[in-house]
Image (cartoon, rainbow, N blue to C red; front, top):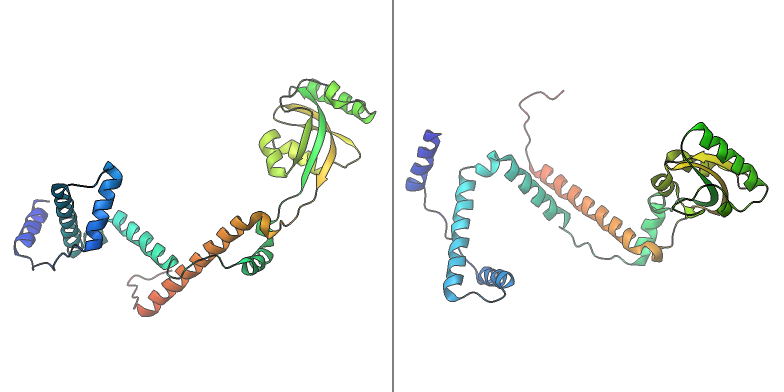
Length: 257
């Protein structure tokens, strides 16, 4: 450690003269604007001078760190440089809104990613508890529902009410759990089924069914545009990396299995 420090001190004392540090007018303006945004007022002459001095000091430290290869030895710095370069390559070509015609074609080509799943809604009578007695009560309620009794008058109170509006499988899983969501998916329209949830047991009948569909572009345009732009950035990055590979000579000294 002491040797490394002595080497750094020697380099700083005897190293080659650094290139001029040019603090451009736009840089000074940016320093002034950043100060004003933070403090709510423009900097004084003395404060602006201090800001410029700090900028120069940081630039000198960055240059010397690069000259000593510290940016290559530090994995955190290396990772940040990689991320920054990836961002630069992703934005190498403008990614603006291409218009409805292009997005319509994109939506058609990627319909599976944007298709809305089928939804089913049901009415039900609820029985609190998870044991066999609660299950038997639910089956008794199912027989009453088959006879035409109103589910709102049967069973135990349920926090979410006796009517579940149309919901897709994932939404039902989040509210009731997987067993009930599977039962709803498999239930015929003309029968009452008994299913267990994370709350207890339910005697339920499917009352509303909405098939899956591909929404019109106008309904999900923002999402389609975001997906299209994300793919364009990925394409830009792939082209940029390919161009770097074409210009590079790669030598791998250790065998790669």
